[in-house]
Every structure is written in structure tokens, then in C-alpha cells.
Amino acid sequence: MADEQTFLDEIVANPDDDIPRLIYADWLEEQGNARGEFIRVQCELATLRKTQTRYRELRAREQELWLHHGAEWVKGFPYSLRRCVFRRGFIEESAVALSYFVRNWAKICRLTPLRHVTFTQVRDQLKILEDCPGLEKINSIRLKNAYPAVDTRPLARSPYLKNIETIVGRWCDLGLTELSKSTAVGSLRTLVLVGQYSIPAIEAFADAPQLRLRHLDFSYGIPTRAVPVIARARFGQTLEELVINGVDITDDIFIQLMESPSLPVIKDLRASNMDYQLGVHGPGLEALAKNPRLANLRVLSLTNHPLSFRSIEAIGNSPFRAKGTKFHFGFHRMGMNSPMTAAQIESLRERFGRTFGNL
Image (cartoon, rainbow, N blue to C red; front, top):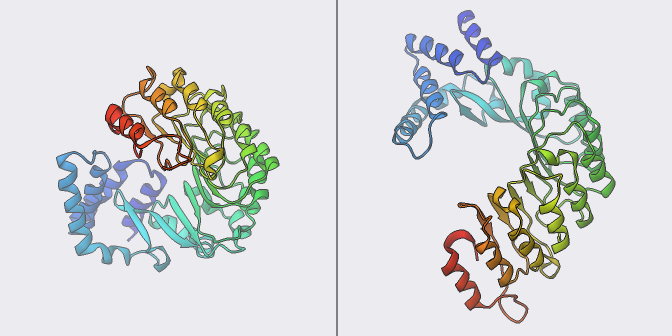
């Protein structure tokens, strides 16, 4: 057992390195333990594309090994850790009761390189999580908490967030302001927040100098007036994906987003509208069609906007439209208030094929 723990300590200390895992796999196979092969199979799978024949072969073997031995392998972990996902042979993702993690993180982290945690039974427990050194061992946090939002300020103040790359969950307005002050979130790259956020909180967030976000999702959580604030955010220099579904943006606001010097590398913009009449009608899309920045986009989703035939045609004909970019301009209402006729929609389908995903 002491020898085995030595292997595990090395794996936990170097979670990105396959070599300690493969050395452990060799040792397991010498003991006649099928988990050695399982580790080896999953490590190789992580290096392959799903379209490769070798991937399909290994995937089938992985499932066969799991079917025969998975229940036995999971028994070696605490019961509260069994809602889990194995990657490269070890539990790297699991749902865990928050208080259980706080009490047992040291034990858990001696058994497996746990990196992605969904905290359940959150309620008012975030204060104890604030002071938990175990947060330094994980890379992503998902809060499974129902409405209304719990007070997330204690978590935002934690000094142990320095390795956290992803935060997902219902977050309170004051918690967002507190997060903007944190000096421990320099590694944060993905933020997916549910909740309602005020202009002052968004302004503090946008002005935070330490953030280097790549993906931001504020769906259904910010007022329209907050979008121009995000367009000038300091973290915009690194932002590649922005999701602001459920926010009524106009042509003017859309142009601000697409032409903002603070958003030079944006590749993915998703902005479905709540009010069909208040959305992007066409000038914003026509301006984008003339802008070289269109070449950077890989996904543009503007569903439930009253886009004109002329504006969508302009995107289709733009010399800056990159091959393979996915445009979603669906939910065009037919009838008296529709900006396009059925014949125009059919014309776009015929001329541009699948370029416009859900027309």
C-alpha cells in the first residue's frame, strides 16, 4: 500500500503529466489489475481525434473495461465522490457536497487528481469554503444552487482561488463586485454566471485589471445598458467568446461590440433577443459585413432578431466571411411583421447552403 500511495502522490502532484500515470499503470498490470490497461487506454484516447479509427477501437475497449470493472474501481473512493467522471484513468470530475469536501479534501486529493468539482448542498456553506486550502487543488467550480442566489461574497474573497480557471453558477450582485476586487483570480478564464447584475457591479467587473477572461456568459442576467460597458472591459483584450442571450441589443449596440478596440480577438458571439422588435434589424449586420473583423468570427448567433434580407445577404457575400464560420439567424417570424418573405429565406438557403444554420 505504501508503494501504491507513492505512485498516487506523484500523479496528484503532476496532474497534467501522463508519465506518472503510465508508470502506475505498469505497476497495476504487474499485479494483474485491469485498471492498468484502463489508465493506458484513456491516456491514449485523450491524444486522438474522434474521427480516427484508433479512437473508435480504444473507445470500445474503454467501455468494455468499465462495464466489467467500473463498479469495483469506484468502490475504492469515498461514497460522496462516486458521481464522477474518469479521465486518463482517474477521477478528475465529480459532484461533491460542499461541507464534505471541506472536511475531506486532503483525503480526496491523496486518492485522485480531482480537478473539476460541482458543489452540491451549497445553501449558506460558502463561508467555510472560503477558508478551505483544498480549493487550490482544483481548476473549476460549479455551484449547484437554486434560486435565489446565495451570498457568494465569501467565495469571491477566498485566497485559494489562484488555480481556478472556470466558475459556473448562480452568483449574487455583491459577489460579482467582490470577485472584481480579488487578487487571486488571475488564472480565471471562463465565467458562466446566472443571476441579475446591476450596472455598478458590471462596471466594477469590467474595470478589474487582474482578469484575463476568454469565455464570458451573462445570459439573462444583465440590462441592455451593461453591454457597452462589457464592450470596453479590460479583460476584453483576451476575450474570445461572449454569450449575452436574453439581452435586448440594438443595431447601435451590436456595432459597438463588433467594432470595439477592446475586443480584438472575439471569435464567438451569441446574443439572442428577448423582444423581437427591439433587436438587430440590419444596419449592424451590414456594418459587420464590411469589417475585416468578420474574418475572426467562427460563431455568430443572433436568434430572435428582425434581421432584414439585405443584411443577411451582405454577410453571405462579404469578402471577409471565413469558410466554416457558423451563423445562426433563426426564429424569423413569418406573417405581417416578418422582415423577410418565405421566398427570400429560400433564396438565402439556396445561395449560401448551410452557412446560415437555422434559417
